[in-house]
Length: 442
Image 1 (tube, rainbow, N blue to C red):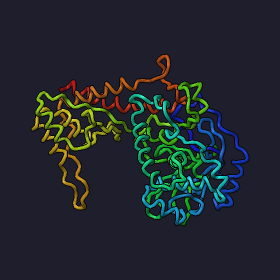
Image 2: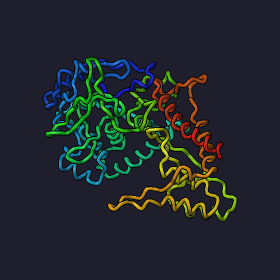
Image 3: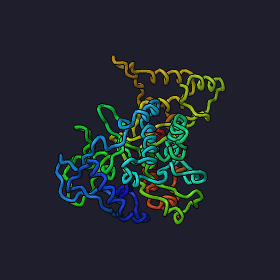
Image 4: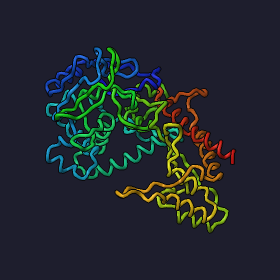
């Protein structure tokens, strides 16, 4: 009984064989029943062709039917922590508090042994990458993945410093990995928080609109309810939320169990499990490195650096443009348009005009932040030229990395990285096409 798996949009040609159900799986189901977890006759756990073990409909399911109920007391979340543990985690983010709780439960299950036995024994996702293994993720294609990991690790290390000394970094890192890969993000008693749910976490992911079940909290139980008609044999799926591909890969992508691993398909195949990404992901995002236009006048260069909002430029005087999708193509967010105008400014007057537009809007009566009043037609020709060049450089740096020019990534045998990389190129290319067209028109 294993959680997670590549979606139908990933390649599974080199997918490791799924494990067989054994005594630990039977013990888990027996424990779940004794813990008050109720499942309908339509809820089955079976091996699938491309997703390992997962929940499958054993019979036709109608909208509104309840498939699983998990009592609040059988879940693991911040609200279920004992008072001493709650005091320890008061200053922590909820995900880190839950990771600490997972560490404690793993060390002393207190009746949860069959459930804990199915948790990962080693860190998953990027939490399992160490040392030289990171060289496999060089290049623009994995910029967002590395950014997420670096930010997540920095936050986790800061949280770890506040924990009792008997919780080593390696133990806490595993706890964070468990929460990242298995916890559901739910609203409980009016507050959104991560929750570890036995049995329900065997449901695999589909992007929003394609999943057929949803988790709700009602009457002190977590309920898995059918949201659209499901035929017998069809997977029971939930949505992990609106997540970009880097985030889907970040927590659930793979598990490197060896430290000295040669980065090739043959060596890594045995270590990699259950990665997925969506080729057509409306929530996908990317960061595009945009250098400033050279300043012909050194005085203006100094003024531009001084007037640009603090934190927007990196140490090499570059913006990082946030790319994403809208319902009808690339999303031209006000922040992105403002950055294009700032990058292209060639005089103090142009710089001030861009800053003034960025400060427009005024907010509303309830004090919400003002939204920049920047129109796409106000971006000058130089801004489109800079964007086109940045897209060209990014696309050149994120070319498929497989052998002999194919589109496979050798260190991700089942294809999740290829899907994520291709989806990211689609996003950058969509921006590039607009930039090329507007640059040429100008």
